[in-house]
Length: 229
Image (cartoon, rainbow, N blue to C red; front, top):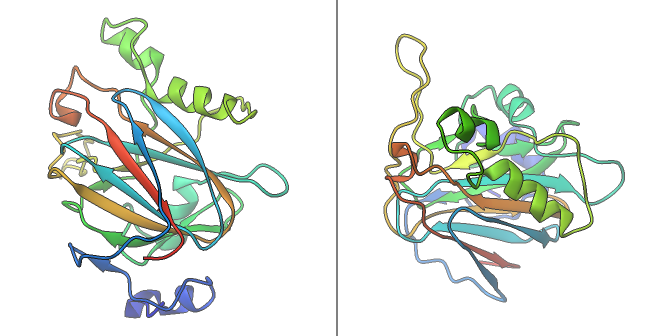
């Protein structure tokens, strides 16, 4: 990978393929693809191999996609947004940056951004208690959808790691407040990631429908996994 100048030292030791990460629609050709649709307010697990690309697309626009990642080799390890913030020294992901595990291992590279560019790494997954406080007991939520997806792979964990919230528009305000605004992502907006190791990924289509987060209505997320682009 011909990295952005400020990330060159990271890229040289990351095993990332020799191609510049980019933004916008450059018309890449996805080959040998496996494609999936995640219905609104649900989630799904995917196994990816080292060296594969993952494209996550907001089909109809304004829909947040929560990403969780787990190592499938050795002891349990998972994508850690706190380690990612610390090691990148940034609050939010950027093109060419790495997503790190709890054990500070590079898991994914943020390869390309074809979205509006707003993503979050500060919020936890929505859960049953959030909806109960809003007067919506029993509402679908990303934490439960994560656990259901992991169970389908024979995995149970006693906690939910904080996700990377792609397409979520939640910039910190000048007074320090964290507001979740309506997503600005257009229909077809997407991100592409590259896997540094074999991983179990879980992607959930955010379930929030009582707040502007997803534009007032929850819609589907498309996932495509390919060996090359």
